[in-house]
Amino acid sequence: MISIIGAGPAGSFLAYQLAKKNHEVKIYEEHKEIGNPVQCSGVVTPALEEHLKIRKDIIVNRIKKIRFYSPDGKFFETKIRPDYVFNREKLDQYIAELAEKEGAKIINKRFLDFEKNSKKLKLKFNNSYEETDILVGADGPYSQVAKSAGLFKDRKYIIGTQARTVIPVHEKERVDIFLGYGEFGWLIPENEYTARIGVVAEENPKEDFDRLMKLTNARIINFQSGMIPLYNSKIQTQKDNVYLIGDAATMVKAATHGSIAYSAIAGKCLAEAIDKNKDYQMLWKKEIGLDLWLNLKIRNTLCKFSNAEYNKLVDYFSQDKLKNILSEHVRDFPSRFLLKILLKEPRLLRYSLKAL
Image (cartoon, rainbow, N blue to C red; front, side, top):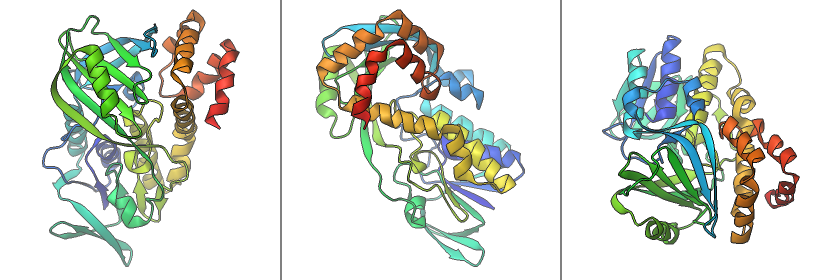
């Protein structure tokens, strides 16, 4: 028996992979409705499609361009391979349905703790106990599984604040990124009249969020916010027959703060590790470890930028030779294009010292 705590994309996709391999799987979810509350900007790159085909009714909009604004109001714009703006609630429910169709069972219970009982693990829930052979924590940034297993260690978080808003959208196929607002701010169109506007910051983002709302002159429909873990390469994701995945394992792209595509890749790695008795940590680090590390270094570098340096950065990337590289690659994997950018524009190397 394999027990997965958390029915978000990481947990449900893993359950889907394991159930396809004929493993007995149970997913335990504390919220009554899968997909709520929403704590996500709701954009994925085409990298996810290599692992999961997204149903058309889940897609709200397709993004073909990104415009980056510097603090002084200048910008550069680049075409990209189309991103998907999606309905997060529907996406979570869709992946959970895939797992159920393969035989996984979803149970509404809140996980509290576990103890080892002979070869089994005894799981404690809010109103019962269950036994399992394998336990997987897919239970988010404050993973109770990680805490119970002694795998939580030192973790850092940033705060994402987003609102769905009413605003006239001039180009619904373009996302706007605002540098100098927290770590960065964004405007993600859903259609011609609605957009998601948000800011991510290490501390209280309210001031920068309010500034961005004033700049865009949008009207708030509702708020969506949450804590985002920063990747920590020292965190162990495996201890005996207990594993961590997704946000519970800090598998988040620190430069953009997305995690769904990486969770899908790690899900395939963990399913293979369990099915064939392989080293899970070695498998996922081989696939995404370098890119997680590079994303963290990029984020740490940008966090040290002054407004003047952001302005200069936008000037550099206004060059076609750099925009062409960005348009050819998905941003999930900087290992595939970062060196190309540095070779085309060696002046960017001077910023690498900030990463150290």
